[in-house]
Length: 147
Image 1 (cartoon, one colour):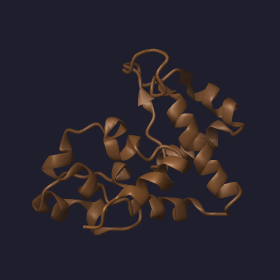
Image 2: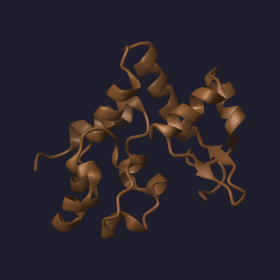
Image 3: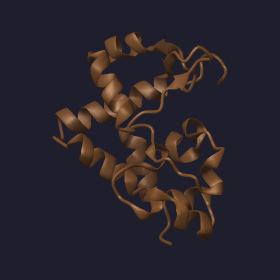
């Protein structure tokens, strides 16, 4: 777990995060099921959220409520993040990866069995952490070099 007082420290309970965002726990569960958020889970399987997670959820809420982008649209945009160029996984792994071969969900929401991802923690993967809020998503995408 990250050190206390860091933006990635999972401090907020499931209910607290929902209250901070002004949404229902049902909506939080839906975002998790749809692969938009990967909560930290304690040893007793309780979900915890960090400031970074709250920022991610605010971005999602803004995309839905202000920009009128559907959840499937958000998933589609996130699925286009060229994770293979960020983490430099090999050609063999890419061929086995549903995120690389599809375009409907972000890499952290797939059940990838490729060797490169098999034992990785998606929550701490740089693809997930570097695309945490609306501004970082835009800036990170602008900075990516063409292949």
